[in-house]
Length: 136
Picture 1 (cartoon, rainbow, N blue to C red):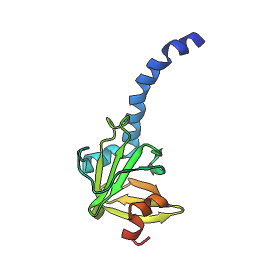
Picture 2 (picture 1 turned 180 degrees about the vertical axis):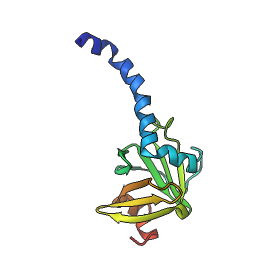
Picture 3 (picture 1 turned 30 degrees about the horizontal axis):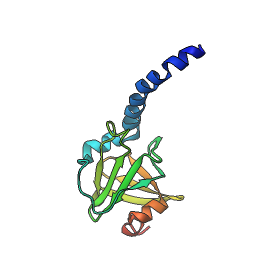
């Protein structure tokens, strides 16, 4: 049995990797947001994207996989390149976002996607100007 895992573990990982990220994009809500807010990866941004270390959507934690930036028009989010086939870049305009403080995080509710919210650490919300924009 040990020989089986040694011999085939790489192939199992290669097979399971896309399945796990497809499921996370579907259940987590990224796929729904992509249908509404997908943006080209090469879109020029005013600010350099920074890694978002604490972020979650529905049942999934995307800690360390998401990079984001904000400008006067909205919030830009994109995933680490290894997950990008199932998580295309997003641009969500501020007009489609409401925000509320929940414990030590800020919850961003997406008005065109009821039931999907993004929870982000307060420190990142400050960096992106979310706390000032929404008076939190």
